[in-house]
Length: 304
Image 1 (cartoon, helix red, strand yellow):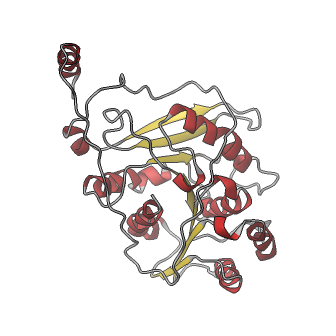
Image 2 (cartoon, rainbow, N blue to C red; image 1 turned 120 degrees about the horizontal axis):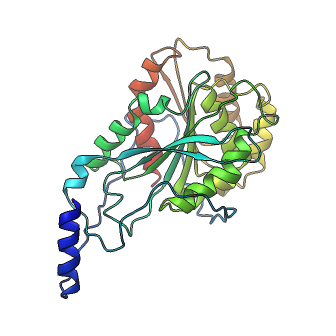
C-alpha cells in the first residue's frame, strides 16, 4: 500500500470507520523426507534475555495500518545491519529476512530462525542460496507460517570455542538486540538455530550448551568442532531436562565425509534422544544445500 493510500486510510479512520486486519493462519507441513524418528515438541519455557539498547534498523509503520493483500505478492525483504560488540574486534555483521506483510500486520509477532554460514563464506551465503525466495514461496502458499530469519557473519572462522567468542556474542548480544528491534516471540520454543558445515557446528554447540534459548537445532553437513567431541556433547545433553530436549535435525550427503556426523547421530540414538537423521544423495557443496533448503524450512517451521 503506497503512502497516498495510507494517508487516505488515516482520514477515513478518523471519521469513525473501522479498519479490519485479517490474520493469516498457516498449516504446519512436515518435511518432504520422512523422518526416521519422531521428534517431540519442546516444553514452553519463557526466556528473559539481557536488555540492550541497539539502534533499530527497521522502523515499522504506525500501529493500525491495515494489511494489504498486495503485500503477500511483494514478498519479504533482506535487511543488513551491524551490532557493536565489546567482545569482538569488529562490529558483528548480520542480515535479517523480514517476512511478507511485516509492515502491514503490526500486531503480529514472529518466531525467529538463526542460520549460520559455512567456513570461508559470510552472512550472504544463505541469501545467495535463495533462503528468502524459498521462504516467500512457502509462506505465500500457506505451507509454512511467516518467520524472521537472522544470518550473522562469523568473521574469525578458524578459531574454535571456547576461545572463539562468536557463540557468546550471538547468545548474549545478538538475540536480545533482535528481540528488541523486531516483533519477535522471545521464547525458546519460538526460536531455532541451524547452520551448514561449520555453521552447523555452531548450531550444535550453541543449541546444546545454551538449550534454554532454542527449541530446535538443525545441523546440515556438520562435522562438529574438535572441542565438541561425543563425550562433551553427551554432557551438554545430559544437563537438559528430558521434557526440554530440543528438536534435532541432522542431514548429510552420501558422498560427504560422514565420520564425526555419524558418531554424533549414533550417540543420540544410544542415548534415546529423539532426532531426525537424513542421508541424502550429494556432496559437501552448495548445490547440495540448495536442493534441501525447502526441507530445512519446513522442518524448522513445523514447530511453530
